[in-house]
Image (tube, rainbow, N blue to C red; front, side, top):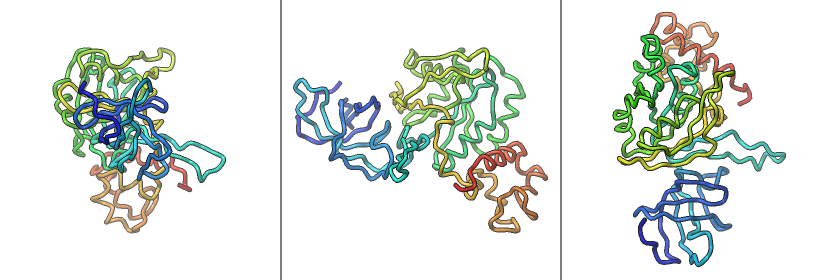
Length: 319
């Protein structure tokens, strides 16, 4: 760790860990500070979490002495992207605040498993809708290929490959596909997310070559994974780049996805939408719908279209 700077000076850095009211911030020269907010902390990020992992902040260093903190966060810079939880429900709705899980990520890494739990393309589609709405690059990692390396698994992923999504087939247990994945992560801030039990933490540990995160097992009775990630944490990869391990998609806030804008986040729809009879076509029941026609002719994958309908039906009509 680098030598601390003189107190009362200012510096910029990135938040790598959040623990209650305490934050770990790494400055541009690699110095690590324990920091806190104070009543004068300013932000341009609206009514959201004041500080989150991945935030770029301006610090004001303070005299430490025997105090716990070495700096206060003076300003939180505007975020380029944000993964958020569902809004907190409060009696006074005007005071609702969106909780940010991770900020300023470059790409979302969606981790699914080939088996145990079974591969769910519906879950992948929900992640992709979220990523497209945030204009994030996306990598799909199919893990646990040592348990189910079958033609059926790769067949399920063909529509995503055709759409241009990057797909990696890995086995954290056998260290298969790790070099290629590590290369794709180098120099970028990547958020890992996936259903519990898909081997996400084991995968991250393999990327580091030693255990950085606790791992869990799949519940034998339910077939679902045991949760091992409760808070976002940023980790510096040995070869450069950062990883943020995040909770699963059920924790993500999809409130900005409406029935009206959902169609724009299935990117294979974009080519055909101008040919719909109605400009406000929902692509569900309307006559002359070019999307339905493309599905019938095989130009749009039918399972992806079924995912669209499922997500459409799940969205509150008042959203």
